[in-house]
Length: 553
Image 1 (cartoon, rainbow, N blue to C red):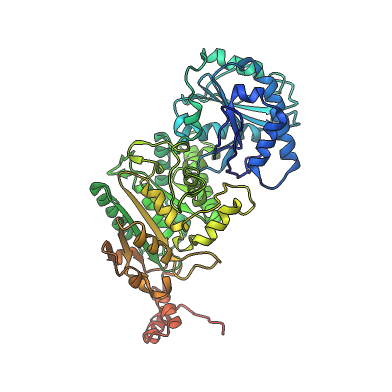
Image 2: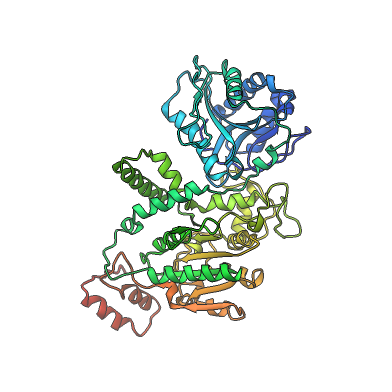
């Protein structure tokens, strides 16, 4: 089935071992699944999906249930577990079926009605296995077996072999439905796997997202082989973002040493390189003096899907090319996965944290549900990264917009439903980092006057959350945040009673990398729009540098 289904809902189970779970449409012990009425299982999946009713999707689920209730009878009495449409945390991908049997993770991808194994389908199920190994904490030490099942395929894989990378992932297996039971049995024999004595499925299902060190290493190599400055395509030899990057890295260093929580607001004129700063910090934070800092990673998060797609593809293509030039075998899928360790869509980060809360919310207060989340030492119930960089932070959603969105279960009604969500997106993101028990840093990249869509809160929503609920957080902001385009010039007023504020010129990027020949162009436009007295002098400087300005009346 397609991996574009993007749903994250819960359901109430009626049988003993089935659970109410936020990461899949259905899960239960294998015994309960095999004893259940197939129509009931299908009904639960459809009810949990509550999205757009697609006939081919429904038919595929019906076929999968029948196939598996026949194919898995040999292991009926064992301590095993099954999950349909499992959402790999923060990656936006869903596995058709995960079978947890004898310590092995079987990733089953069905192609209902197909009688051939397309290369793209083989790569799809292998990608799921690789994503589990590299990003899913409780899969890192497990044997993972990806199986592609074109249902009318009349052959089956005969050679069982783990990959040459010593990662305990099998090379993809392909089989039709008739040979599926014997193929699973062959894997079990090949692994000499005994029946499970303990139930490990519960923790596996709610496993934290955590990139493996090999992925972190690959991301570093990737970044060093390709300057993100190349993507911005600027020509400004004398322009540098180093001062801003160094300031942020120093805030991170001090926050770690003092075990504090801090937030930095970075402003900049259009095209000044805020994206470059964010990506630089995301990578450099993980390395000090050339050595890997395994426990203090960062992630760059953007709600701009096209931006993430373009940057990911550019970096991935470049990495693949350079690796191939060095004689190293590297495919594009692997390169994309490496980029994905430090560059992600913000909604997936948010949804992964939402899956951990008590739902419905009680007394207007966000709380972790211990049945849905694993507490990981000083990470607490937070995500693995100490540092989160939020691009276009001024466009975070208001409380009303986020609450309405979650009440109906997303734009199309196919995501997690939270009927009474109590806070804005900015407040929720701070809450998410605040779940760490040691230290954390948020970096907000802020564009002025860009709250262009209905329901986007602007920078004032962040400040309100800090003033009311997160007074223990240190606040580092650009002294340009008092300009009219940021919170209508009321930032200083909003922060007046906050005793933990530090202002710095280093947090403002004044020069546009897109139009570096007129460093005062943005200042001139600002002065013109605010009727400032210095507009004529600024225009003179712009004119002398040969930049033409055309204004439509």
